[in-house]
Length: 359
Ligand code: NAD
Image 1 (cartoon, rainbow, N blue to C red):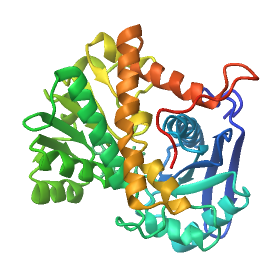
Image 2: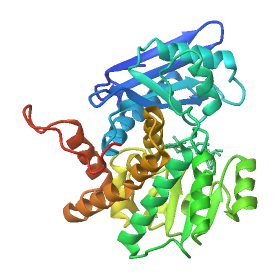
Image 3: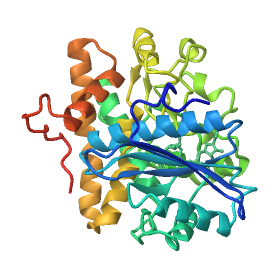
């Protein structure tokens, strides 16, 4: 397994492997870029089939966080961590304490938040061993950033339907959501409240049933959800769902979801464009969570946090405008915009002010 030549390495500043004999912890912390601040990103727990798969995931996710935070106008860098293990079987308080100690050993260059396989309770356990965690304050959602993530995705959908369909509301539109976990459920609620017809699928039967019972989501088989004939497809489960195999079979006009790294590779955005599908870059519209985490860290008022999440609409509108003008894929445009915020054009130039100002 190579690190420096790994496809997703992209000049990471720091990649650290940690293990603990007593608890069985095996984890990786990756910090991609700290130009704008400490590398803040979720701690994912997943039963990776190999160490190489875990490394690939953490590197891609960490790089994505650099772009996400830059584009959201946050004074944060890009980082991520993964714990190799099954969150339902292997998670113990001692394991979370060991992860907290591992995070602490990085001296604040990495700050952890929740992610798939970890929750606020886990972050609170880590916080007993390190102060370099986020997402544990008691805001109206109890520290959980998922509702803010869902709000950002919902606003992204509204921007996309305005752009593509000239529609001012989701009422009557058909939306397919893959994954009805933390984010997918809240997104379904926002869409159902507005009168959208929401279809959903989840491997976890309890999560699916909750959305059916509480929101009236129409259940769909896990194998069919991506290929529904809908106005909007919202991938809210795992990454890499948009690839050579799935893209030609999609029947949605717009793809806008919360899952990180939905494109199996960057070139798949052009493929979506060739198929006439409008893709809303995941790292742009799912930034509500990291925006929330930032405002929890600095103790902002809820109104400030919400106003910041709402500015995702402005950034997406600008990306869609530039994409139309240049005929370049939206993912490329969004990365280009993030790079403008990260690096001055030349050594003497000022860094550009993001469309979405922090605070
Ligand atoms: P979650 O684990 O709470 O929910 C994911 C759901 O997807 C689960 O219910 C799971 O059973 C389901 N699922 C997994 N594979 C599936 C499949 N093949 N088909 C259908 N359902 C499947 O995670 P979450 O916090 O809701 O996050 C969802 C995605 O959004 C992840 O990719 C995460 O990295 C990303 N994300 C989350 C946040 C956040 O604030 N939680 C922020 C940014 C990005």
